[in-house]
Amino acid sequence: MLMVLTQTLTAQARPESLAPLAEQISPSVVNITTTTVVEGRTGPQGIVPEGSPFEEFFRDRPGNGDENRPRRSSALGSGFVISEDGFIVTNNHVIDGADEIQIEFFPGEGQPAETLPAKVIGTDPKTDIALLKVEADMPLRFVRFGDSDTARVGDWVVAMGNPLGQGFSVSAGIVSARNRALSGTYDDYIQTDAAINRGNSGGPLFNMEGEVVGVNTAILSPNGGSIGIGFSMASNVVRRVVDQLKEFGETRRGWLGVRIQDVSPDVAEAIGLEKASGALITDVPDGPSKEAGLLAGDVIMSFDGVDVKDTRGLVKQVGNAEVGKAVRVVVYRDGGTQTVLVTLGRREDAERGETSTQPAAPDVSEKDILGLTLGLLTDELRKELSVPADQNGLVVMSVDEASQAWEKGLRAGDVITEAGQQKIVSMDGFEERIAEAKEAGRKSLLLLVRRAGEPRFVALSLEN
Image (tube, rainbow, N blue to C red; front, side):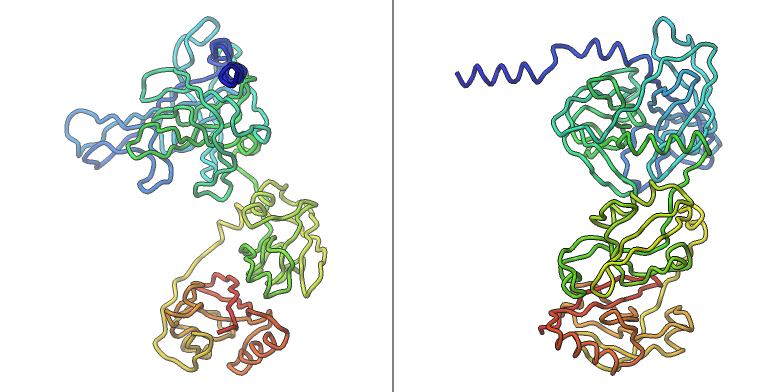
């Protein structure tokens, strides 16, 4: 009886045939061939930068003759048509650096009989998405985006593309996992075991209704071939990017103007927060949040009416928000909550103005506290560490490698600017903050630490 029930459930879960679906969606899938003039290269290489987290889904074809002379290199990828007037979505790494882009359509009646050149409308390296456009003499077959948030682990999905340059093909599998992150700020990948190989990059991942729920982007593999671990950027992310590329030719993401870190349990205890959630502000440079009155040490609990779980969630919420929109930000401050109205800036503008510096570690010492050898921040040390002239605090001269301070990542050259959410200008002040925390029954002391100008909070235990 059990065997019969298992067979019945299996039959219900697995469709009889994917052929009707494949026939419906195939005309919208395209092969993409790019050519690039390569100079001074001695052998075939991919156009994905070395060290990229993405697998190389396509490969160069070496030319003939002297390898030291300029030659034309070809690469393959996939894409899909999203409108009858010729807009096409693919991965940015498929067309990045290409001199020419050719689109080959699925063969069949009512399809363009030959390849068409494409122009780049816009790209977004952060999500690895590119929007192309072709001019055809007929309306093109196209597909629509589905709601990737409704995709469940275990749902059937179909991948289409041009694997290994073999031409159009279909593979099927299930959604293996949701909300995967690889290395990007805005990552939201669907993991699937549908076969994805080199050349599938930029192709669509369909649900059983023929809607695009992902763009095939990356694989995990020891040999470069599919082992059943593929990643597709979720369609709800892609759709927003494509809409902006179509309208502006570039992305326009919201910018709050704060540096943040996750709230760990020990940090939550140190500041009196009941639950380790939200995003802890470590720095407020010039920008929207500073103008609105947000402060380092505030914990962002809610953004534009949506609870903030952690820093990753907040970054995505802010990035999806409209530039110039006034949003309500609820923060935890001094044991209570406050609401601050912030008018969002544009992240792309802010990133163009960012700079960074590298400090040098000092070689003097002053006093040992909590496993740290600390010294006052003198003008000489400010210059050596590239610290602003108006910055006060204590310099970490050395760290006991057996201490919790070492385990928490504190290192020589770090500058402690706050303790217990109060500014530190002297060694006595630091010791006073330690005494106050112990008197209040705290198990740890919250430090604001800067390294190369980048701030972060560290909760250091007071029990040893």
